Amino acid sequence: MLGIILAGGTGTRLWPYSRTMTPKQFLNLGATHESLLQETIRRLSPVLAPENLYIIGSIVHELELNHQIEQLLPELPAKNILLEPQSLNTAPAILWGLTRIPEESWDEPLVILPADHLIQNRDRFLNQLKKGEELARKGWIVTFGVQPDRPDTGFGYIKSGSALEIGNKVDKFIEKPDLQTAKEFISSSEFSWNAGIFMVTARSLLNEYKKLCPDMVPFFFDDNIPRKELNSRESVAEVFTKIEPDSFDYAILEKSDNVAVLTIDVEWNDLGSWESIYRKSEKDKNGNVSRGNVILQDSENCLIFSDKRLIAGVGLKNLIIIETSDALLACDLTRSQDVKKLVETLKREERFEYKFHSRVLRPWGEYLIITEEPGYLIKIITVNPNKRISLQRHFHRSEHWVVVSGIAEVTCGETNAFLNENESTFIPKTMLHRLKNPGKTPLEIIEVQQGNYLKEDDIERFDDDYGRPTNGTIEV
Image 1: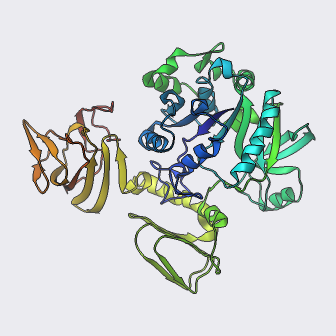
Image 2: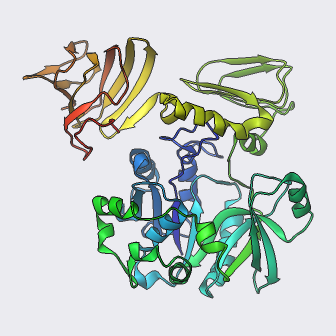
Image 3: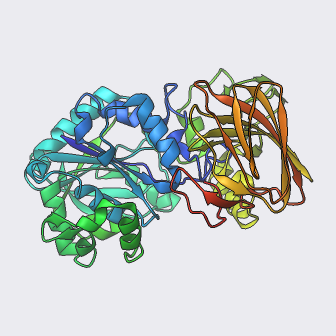
């Protein structure tokens, strides 16, 4: 068996835990201490060798994606990680994934699934994949429909048609229904939720793309041969500018006459909202779900997560309260889908909290924002051994660095100096500078920025070890 994990999502309904630079697939929201992506990888490990697993993500999540894969599956070949230069939805992403599969494996069943769903019954799920293999080898595109347990209007539905040896042929796919229609659906065994999990052979799927998306295929294949242009980041970026976005459901599934459905009951949850987190979580005797530093009295049916500070509640009912180091969300339990609208407001206002947490990964290490007020900002910066930041300058801020631990090599204008613990230096506005860790242990410094503009795009970069542009763009 082969597998493609789709890990490029930028979900917004789980803000403030999920941010565009750290979306839910990278967060611990499941049944273990691992992220949803890591749980997905581990779920497939009994049936997939590392060389048969392909992960497709976004280039903006490259650091986090590589970090989490390295933690769990360091033997995954680098060529099996595909980074989209821009999001074009799932149809181009999956077709790009097919280009990495060796032709001698084109007749092997291929499971395609999202990185950010929770499946609590792994053994039952793997048994269903084994059943799906039989249909996939016969040329079917198999979709795994989840047995509904309530009339949910947040999911698409699959209507089963004529019976096959295993499962059924799909009669049709149905968009998210209204509540009355959803109630009618769950009263019939013909309907299941569309979980976005598929199985098919690469050969069958490529043939469906040729038939149903003939304009898309030439960007990825020349006849049956993957295009050589897909071997470098620059050429991939150019190719992606020429492709129209499309979802796998619309482009392939809803048009194909060769789709089968297997209905499964595997304790599945797409974790698409805080309400869905509440629904799947274990509750106390008053129906509350809490995580972290939380104390409640006379409260019921609440979801309260504390990242650090104490949250104390009295007389609360049907509330969601989510606290992180830099944001607090409070909303009615039944309005969690509207968090997406709130995040759109943050995006329009270009709020830092829309994209980032206070802790931000960088190719050289990370930084943590301690406090930010008008005119100044304080960070803790960690530079990994033998790493350095770009050679850069700022027009609107000065910086004061204090070494907390490790040894710092500081370039400031024409001078170069080494700083030890408790020593400091000052970087004036417009001064060309660079920070390097020449040691074998992490370098930690406190940075105090002062100025009338403290955003990350006040960086003019002149030299960089990580391939980032040297034209003053935001440091990512």
